[in-house]
Length: 239
Image 1 (tube, one colour):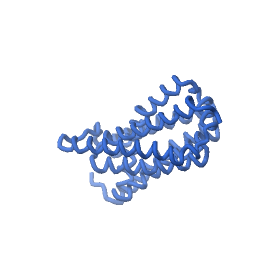
Image 2 (cartoon, helix red, strand yellow):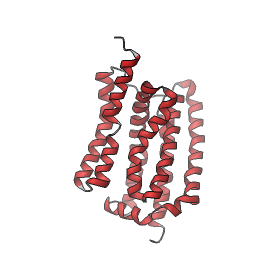
Image 3 (cartoon, one colour):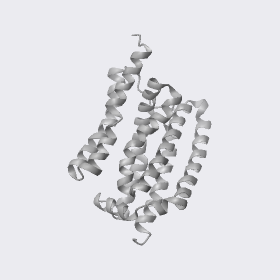
């Protein structure tokens, strides 16, 4: 079946409308409008939606082949060397940015309240939850935001403009979450960093056509954030 460029763009737009806002809706419900069991239920439903909707779309609507986003043998060395270099840069930016401005902007009391409300106020619970976010949630996000959303954005506006567009969509729910967890100033600063990171991860996918190098750098970024969170929550005296 022949699909024209205009019909492909319309289909990509429909896919984005049906999927990209889900995480923002879930975050608004959980953190702003319906905190508690109802909001958390909506949040989890949104996560389930972004896990399943791309598969449904690709298999039954776009009728594309599902792949594991594997790296071609000839590009593996370059991809992993690139991921290693980006990971080092991530560590410098995260720890350097926190030391320069983040410590002043962060509302540590707001973070402590949010962590305690979520039931992960002990060091063990916090680290277990944070590790799950670092390795499992980051994989879900790379699968959804790069493997699915970035490609739909590229079908809609072309690959160069898809980089900031996909990154902006990826950032939207982080603005809600970060402003609640860290306070408005630190939340907005962290969201700007997420937008930059989203551009980098989209470029990783564009370069290597695989989510795995970007996923590894995503894990490194999350682990760096965990290290800061542990220091603020459990190794510093309350302000």
